[in-house]
Length: 205
Ligand SMILES: Cc1cc2nc3c(=O)[nH]c(=O)nc-3n(C[C@H](O)[C@H](O)[C@H](O)COP(=O)(O)O)c2cc1C
Image (cartoon, rainbow, N blue to C red; front, side, top):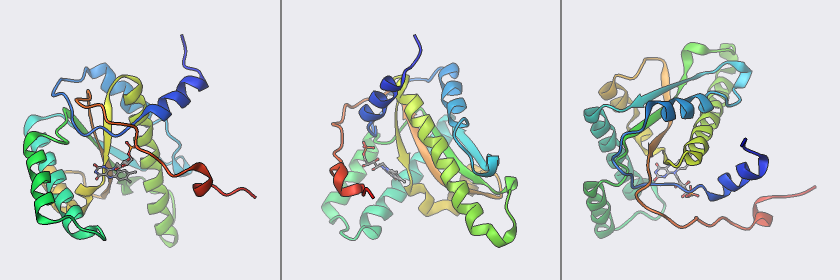
């Protein structure tokens, strides 16, 4: 039985971000299928300006989890236009202690400047198009993971501590953090999060 377009749309419609994971190993073949689906994404100039760091090692996972925590606290306390109050921030700290965002695998998607395709004059486009390519690959991975019964959440907040993160995890030089996925069997069943009605996000000419 092959996938048809109806299955794919249903899969997309049912995906939701997962932040609590079972601490179960992910079989190598599932991980490979997810990563391979990732790099089938369209890529600007056919350049594959990406690099994916897969974190499975126990101690490195804890290091990355701590970057998620610290990034999240910066986001909630300083970045938001309406920052959280002290009491709410403490609730978040407790959730981190209990293991929110702790996943058996993290996949960090990075822009790889070792694979440039554009001249220096168009460096901004190299950056933008590279970020877009990495993002498409990560979305492919999210959907493939969902189709195999895994949950994911996109993690932007470690970017706030990028330089420190790169040296802590020894990430390759000449790369830039775009986003990461936490990946694992869901340990929660969140409701589908609502969207604005189509008419308010789409214009027809
Ligand atoms: C660019 C981007 C960055 C995100 N960063 C984070 C993040 O750092 N932490 C997090 O918990 N969720 C993050 N998310 C997930 C969103 O919060 C989530 O997609 C949104 O609330 C809608 O929920 P849904 O994915 O379940 O539909 C991010 C999503 C995107 C697209």
